[in-house]
Image (tube, rainbow, N blue to C red; front, side):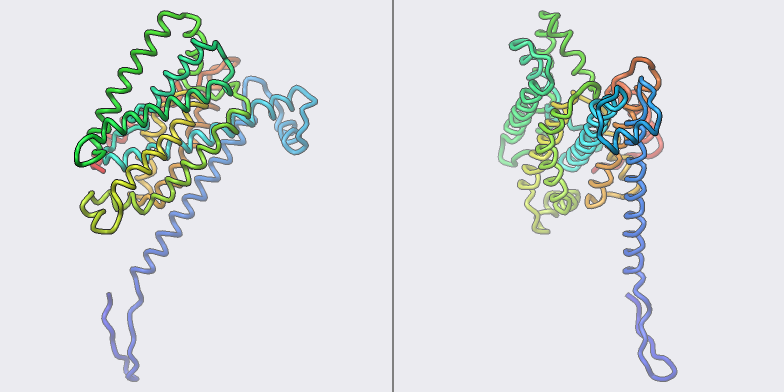
Length: 357
């Protein structure tokens, strides 16, 4: 705070509030960055609709989008295949990145991933059971099993990690998630090894892919993704307090147990629905928070919306890249994100020490 001075005429003057000016400048820069990132996402979405194994002239793509006609082959490809694929990639990428931010904040572990709660493996186990018992290959059918399996696994991990007087401690949650994932992974291996027919169906979902999924899959999981995303955004202030430590958060009036419980629920909704829709996709939830945090800092009020946009961009771009580099076939988005995410994460670790969250 500056000191007051008296001018020659006797009027009292105060220096400008540089702190308020800096805050306004920081807000403007972050808002501009968010708008820029959104623009990049829109550009990548346009590429996702225009690029594929079948070459479609840009004017035909615009014509199909504007008039909504499926009378031609090109119009059907754009409206029935590429548009649902792009929209699903945007929703799933945002969900996985948001779940990653929540996991790293709740556990204060910079290496935390949404799969740490056993959500991915719970969904995988449920899909294997659905295919083995009912033999269904319709994603709109087994998406419900995947979501139920993800929720049951997360609930089991939370119960195991909450035993004791201190409640759901981050270390116990991580250990419980690892144990549950190991058991469920063994079950998946047993079923797929004994039933080759189940393995043939499961392997397409298990690598994580946006290809061939109808719009009904997105409409099925969208309510869960929206609920989880809104819940995460509502917890941004509590997550900021939790980052200062449990005791400090309590002193600031934040409910630590309530924040962890609601955060776990949000992770389950986001990661469970995303995994149920497209299969397990790695590195989005691990890498994106670190990339965004280098721009926004640790403030979750900016970290969460930025991560949603960047996560969507990364997944859709990975899907486009998989279609381009393997024409006329394609490489699944889950494989591309693994190849792209691992070097980026290694570079982040080597460039600077990742502080404990």
